Image (cartoon, rainbow, N blue to C red; front, side):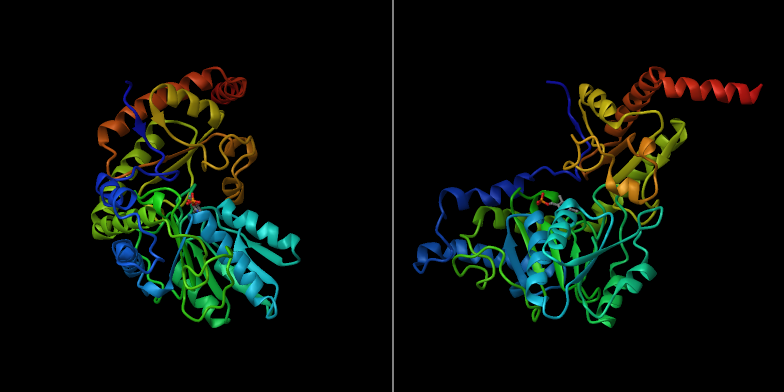
Length: 397
Ligand SMILES: *Cc1c(COP(=O)(O)O)cnc(C)c1O
């Protein structure tokens, strides 16, 4: 088999063997329903409690403020829809940004169709939310501010503490989609005044289909899923015990070595970025050079179609992405790249490479080599590039 180089860790991550191992007994032996009374279910019940504790501790929340969901998308939907419903008597205005994940943006659009008003705040050229604009958007009927912790496409980290301060000063709830940041960056819901936070297992080497929504005690929020009394009557459905245990184990591993992991990834990321910028002409780095996820690199190559680039990388065993997994396959350029001010033709030539702590320097070197070859090949076939080079030559004469 051809060697695979997996550089799409923003789309999903590998389940660590320790995580799979921790989950297995809850599929085979300890399969009791944690809602049951008999002692056979106690092991499952205790494992869920233990996971809830570590998932809470990692962000300085309390276990009773953690609600299990079916993933990041569900948590985002829940945070927005149920806040809207619970607080609609106070007001019907919500603030978010132009660069959110579609789980937020499409939910916000749904709420607009239900009569809510949504302000989509701009970001600057590196993808940082414009704080003055955010604060100026707050009105007496604003009930919620939702700003992601770190962007899944360009990696930009948002100033959560400042946003939390603004939200609190105006008495508005603050939700953050922390799916890319949870377990990767330090988050403190107390210090940052975060009222609700979404996270997902499969973005931190846990299983897919399990997420959490942290809801600060005292926040009124309605159920999204109605049924049994699970999760203090707020999220019905039999708990996904293996998923919860796996997410808990993944969180322990992630929080235990967050610093080392970030340091390793940052160094490798900067090595990749420096070499790409130095060795490949007509290239742009998207996102903030410093305030960015340790594992994220995102470029635009002029005269290139991102999709063709991905196909050729794949033929060489390299998994990359042109933006987010959710928009790949659609021909529209990324809404995030448009929001940071890139014209369509540049935004089309984007490549996102997201590393992990298992990525090696050799893999990066191999990727660079292939990338340079492929880009040259694609540019040599591009009439736009040919035109551009001719004009450059004329200028030189
Ligand atoms: C992956 C992702 C989601 C969706 O999470 P799922 O668990 O896949 O539903 C939401 N927001 C961000 C920022 C993401 O990266």
